[in-house]
Amino acid sequence: MKRKVLFFLKASGAFICVILTVFAIAYLWPMSTLQPPKLSEQTIIKNVNIVDVATGEIAKHRFVLIEHSRITKVDTTNITASDDALIIDGTDKFLIPGLWDMHTHSNQHSAWLHHPLYIANGITGVRDMSGQLNERDSYWVGSKERLQWNKDLENNIRVTPRYVLQSSYQMDGEKAIPEESPNFFKLQKPSQVDSLLQFYKNEKVDFIKVYQQLPKDTYTELAKKAPNYGLHLAGHKPMFLSLEEAVNLGQRSFEHGRIFIYECFPEADSLKSPTNWKQYFSKSKAKIVQEFDSIQAKALMRLMHKKNTYWTPTLQTLKFEANAHKEVFTNNKNLKYITKVRKQLWWKYDTNHNKEKNLKSTGNIVSEQFFEASKKQVAMAHKIGVPIMAGTDVTDSYVFAGFSLHDELFELTTSGISNLEALQSATLVPAKFSNMEEHYGSVEIGKKADLVLLNKNPLSDIKNTKEINGVIINGMYYDEEKLNELKEFTETAASSFHMNVKTLISLVHSPLIRVQFAD
Image 1 (cartoon, rainbow, N blue to C red):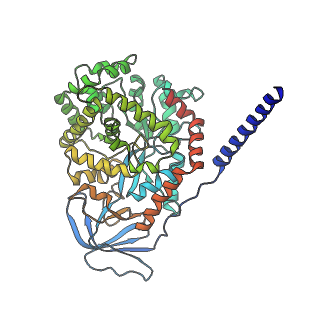
Image 2 (cartoon, rainbow, N blue to C red):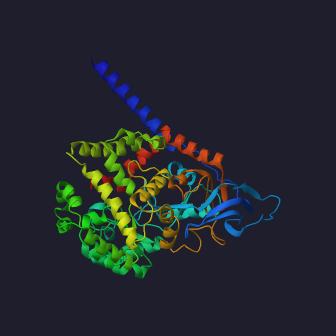
Image 3 (spheres, rainbow, N blue to C red):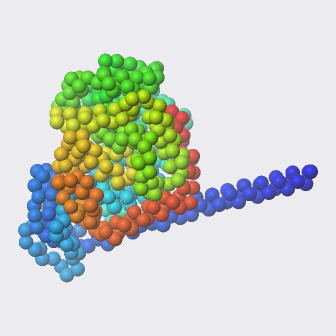
């Protein structure tokens, strides 16, 4: 008996050693890398139809000259170029500026799992709404990584979109910060604000990402002092003060589709109590949406218009919650681009949780009501003049890098926004928000050659933004063959054992992820 026990212990130990060795090798195994196309000194797009995203007019049969990474000439006649110039036939095709996704979340694996899909879908710019604290995180990236990616793009050595505007880590009060982190990140009191702002100014961050549970007095101090450090606030509307107060304090953009639903019903003050707002919300969702006060909402929308405050509705997140119980939605062909670890540990739980809630509903499903109500409010806000930016919330459940931006544009049009206005939400509007109109947002002489060549006219059908023939970013041309290569690269990476091991270990090892899940 003793020998059997010893044998079992030895065998078990050997088995565990083998498993640990396999995981260690997988974790350390180098990932393959993508090479961007060669940059041509001159590129000419011949006989193309240029979509003017400002006016909705189409300039037909134009010739576009790109030198290095900028548009230097647009003409109605053929352009003479050097013998080694790259010539692109634009006959019967439509040229639009590169699309921007203004609400994303990148991580240490984005070079394999996100960047190729952004470029393959014509997304040449993203605003990352994540960040780090004072130490490099195993999962989330910060301004240092993103700025290096931008530098690599400018040097034509990396496949990546541009990262426009750099974010801090999400500021959500004491509970959202690991205990061992410096106290000023926890923002327990207004006196810590200067230390936080100085830290992120030194990190070359552009804005402070604010979240739901930030204390009111600290948020107020943060909003007042951020401009002194060259920073602004963007993110959620903190629960413990009104939307009117946050707008008047200067928050530049608000994220997600619920901001007016939460604010415009008779018992809205019940959501502003730090002690029981979550309990109230969980039992009152139907009341919140059904007793919506459109008069109050319109007054807030007019205030946002007056203050030039932007809104990124990220309708994809509400769409997921509304459809989590439907197999036609969850059996998405793009799941092949998602690691098994994320699908099993994150998305599966999220899907089952929302599916269960939806199936328990009697009559109208509350999450469907939230989704439809938010779409109506997008149209209402846009009509009043609130600038709308397209964003998706990659990496939330069933939000796919690149692909979901096209779905977001479609949902914006079903909300009541025109095809042109939807295009503007991913081109001109975010370029203006980012103070980068001089370089991006339209197809014009002097601007960066971040362009998408479409087979069909997006003004006649917004779904035509998916009909991509080629993508140019920083002057580098990705043809159809290269675009397919990008998709295949991510599909292979997502299904690989070593990428799944890397993802799992980075999630488990990240103190920021652990505290987010605990909260």
